[in-house]
Amino acid sequence: MTTAIEWTDTVWNPVTGCSKVSEGCRNCYAFALHDMRHKAFQEGKRLPQQYAKPFKELQLFSERLEQPVKWKKPRKIFVNSMSDLFHKDVPGWFIKQVFDIMMKADWHVYQVLTKRADRMREIVTAYLEHEKLDKLPPHIWIGVSVENEDANRERVHHLVKTKASVRFLSCEPLLGPIDLSVHLNWLERDTGKPYIHWIIAGGESGSNARPMRQYWVESLRDQCKEFGVAFFFKQWGEFLPHEDDDEDPEFWVTDEGAGFVHTSIPTDDDWDYMNRVGKKRAGRLLDGQEWNQFPDGGERDAN
Ligand code: SF4
Image (cartoon, rainbow, N blue to C red):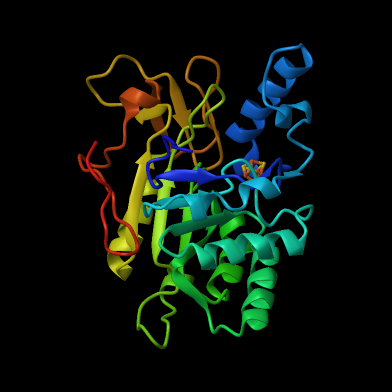
């Protein structure tokens, strides 16, 4: 299935459904989209059977497992854009089948992203032991979502201890400053490079989006530059920093939160002004440049 997500080519959803675990889930697009269709299904609209159930009920689709084998042209595949593969309700035997397919259809690149880093580490370790492998091969990229420092502390140490050839972070929606120096200073013995190979960053989109400060994303880009890590800037989201020649600013944002200029004042003395301009106009330029790097040395094709 094609997708508008800039850092992948296709999504593969052998599982749907999930539950919220952290601030990054607050405005989950998959949740909102699925439950909107679920409501329409209940009202009698003709929609696929998967919408008979709400998003909070996980569904396994064994019949979708073989899809990547049928896709003959190599592509980057985002695994489970409508769920989290390592959710506690996805049984280990099913996750093993997903990994078996990724090993079999090895002409693709798989991007496996989770917020359940502890279970991911446990299951990947067990899988490697079972298959007598030292680490996951370079076509299976393993990543964790890191929206703020809490997520950094909770998840990244599990990622760097997961035996994978390619590890990545998705810092989207970026909700605060993130300091990765502890992890990036730690180098793999065999490659002499950091254990993290790719960082995606982006602001939130959608009607309830929260603004992203410019320095949060610039700091991630600069950490990538300093440590030789590939960086991909996906989007600003709904907001852009206020420029002097813009009309009056609409919002303020601090590291603690955001508010309307006309109804509240920041309690912090360090804030940025932002304007809501919409996702399309906000675009994906950071300091006048697109950042389209991939961990395999590739770049995103121009549109
Ligand atoms: S983990 Fe991902 S899919 Fe699950 S609720 Fe959170 S954002 Fe949505």
